[in-house]
Image: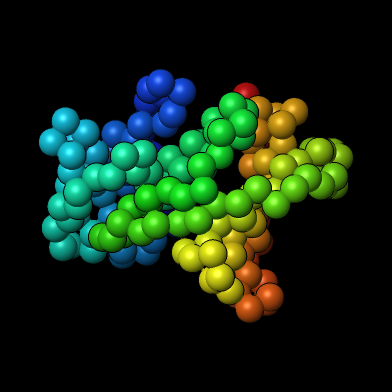
Length: 158
């Protein structure tokens, strides 16, 4: 899977401009037209035209928005994220802190969880390292307590 997001930092928040994602033969691409209030493009050959809500993100820009929000101490409880051809609301909670042994050393981290609803059994947990500008260093998605996938940092270049 390859995903790309183009964005700007506006008033201390990420403002996405474009998104592109590919996985095998599946392809999604759209542009954010903030002046018109729409995201337009295509998802798997079908046209997309979604009305933007304030602060809408794409699947990649949301990661950077969380980093900015954690740095500023302003993590909102919900975000609207465009996923393929749909606008979805996600609930975010800060779950605490943890020391984490990683491939790049022992790191203090902040744990953030994301769900589709406050009681959803499918949870994405992400560990962000303040000492690295809140870069994500680990992520795990589970459903009903069973791990579906995990990502761990291997290296970091700046």
